[in-house]
Length: 365
Image 1 (cartoon, one colour):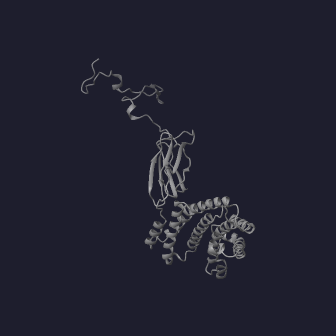
Image 2 (cartoon, one colour):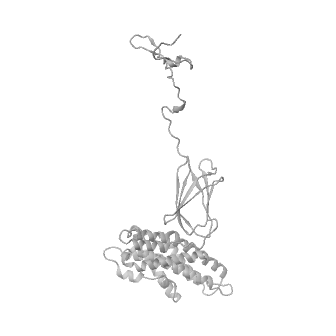
Image 3 (cartoon, rainbow, N blue to C red):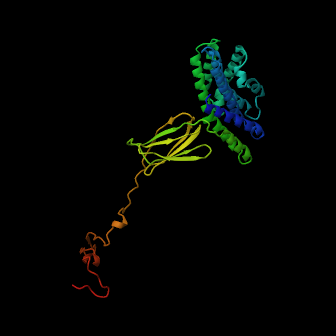
């Protein structure tokens, strides 16, 4: 693992310690407990992939071990949600909770027959109740069951021993990156959301958990985020656009796009960020929950739309350009006499600009 991935695992383990020390506060929260199990299992999965990375023998790595870890990782997520399902209601199903209570380690270690038996039981159980779980509002889908079944089949057909080491090592490296990204972008923010309901009565618990999940910024890149900002209608770059980047802890960093309309953030830590784009004459643009992994370069486009022009008022002439004299109106006809009535022209409008009017004397002719 690289330095950033090691930092992710450190943060998750630190948060898990806080959760364990304060279990009395949240222990009855089944969903929170399920997410804790998912996260601890995911950490174990990452560590398993790391072991696989290092267990090369003359350039070869065990394909069976890789398939086992991949299968167990998917099974761990489903077991966590099954625990929530069988624990719901006034009368939890204690029998099924006991039967389904496999840890990630139990799904991935032991003799191959026992591993296959446990994972198959989890898969069959999940498929039998997935519809009811979806109805109950649990975050599961039928595709999760299909993917798990495929992983079990791959494990079953994988040949024990050492072969195709380079490809498997690359695959393990990719899976470590995927799992660390999920921990950062999804799992830790979700756990912080769960904890927020206890903030009023247990503020120290929430604060300590949030601090445990904070990155130490051990792995940062020189250029982290590259964001071109353009006009929706023309596609031209938009310089002088203010981009505000907000981190989950509330810290905000602002930059302004250059002449090419591109904004660049440097040395960003792994986390999920919100972005706000602002420019005079354009509608504000929000882009939320962009996951970023330190040590990489993230690029995404921001397209802004112009604000609607102000509606014309009845008299839109600026006061500074209005004449000092009243403009004569068109002639009208008196309805009673049928005589043409000419509009009265202010006397000041008939005089030359150099003529002054004495209020006490009539003007000299």
